[in-house]
Length: 284
Image 1 (cartoon, rainbow, N blue to C red):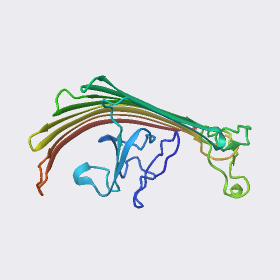
Image 2: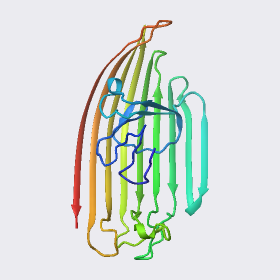
Image 3: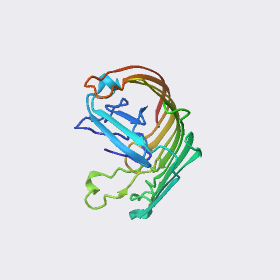
Image 4: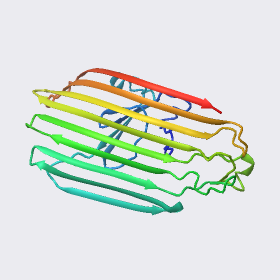
C-alpha cells in the first residue's frame, strides 16, 4: 500500500496492479461495505481488514481488476468502552487517536465516536526561501456511528465521517543531489496540497427466514487542491494548479441466502450510483 499524506495521488498496489497515472482505481476500496472512489482514509478504530485478490467484478463490479480492500470499523454495543493512543516520532511527529462507545438506550440504541490527528514538521527544506517545513503534513479524521436494533431481526447502522489533509508540496530533488542532499529542494514555490471529504451512509439489515435482506445507501463529497512547482528549479518558469470536486450518491440492495447446514449458497443484488466530477487544471 502507498499512502501519500494530503495528496490526491494516494493508491494501493495489489499483486503489481495499481492505479498509477490513472483517475480510475484498479481496486475496490470499501469501508463497512461502502465504496470509496479513492484510498483516502487512515486506519483507526478498526475491527478487521479484508483483502480479496482480483479480479472481483462479479460481486463488486467495476474497478476491481486488482482486488478489493474492505475495512470493517468497530461498532457500538451495550458495553461502555474508551480508547486513547498517542505517539511521538522523528521530525516532531505527533499522532493521537481516541474512541468512545456507549449505549443510549440499552439493547436498542448505541453510539460510537472516533477520531485521529497527526502532524509533523516535515523532512524537506526548500533552500530557495529557507523554509525548513515544506512538507509539513497535518491530518485529521473523524467518524460517528449509530446503531439501532428495534428487533432481533432488524438492524440500522448510520455512519458519518469527515477528513482533512493538508501539507506543503515540494518533495522533488534533482538527481544530481540525491546522494548529497536528499532532503533539500530548490524551487521557487513550496506548493500546497489540500484534501477535504465528508460522507454519510445507512445500512439496514433484516434477517428473514433462510435469507438476509441488506440495503446500503451512501452519499459523499470530496475536494482536492494541488498547487506546485512544475519546472523543479528556483526560477518562476511553470506552476501547476489542479483542483477536483467529486460528488456521489450510491444505493445497493442485496438478498443473501442464510441456510443452516446447507452446501448451497446464493446472492442476488442491485446496485446504482450517480457521480459528478469537476476537474480543473491550469498552468502558469
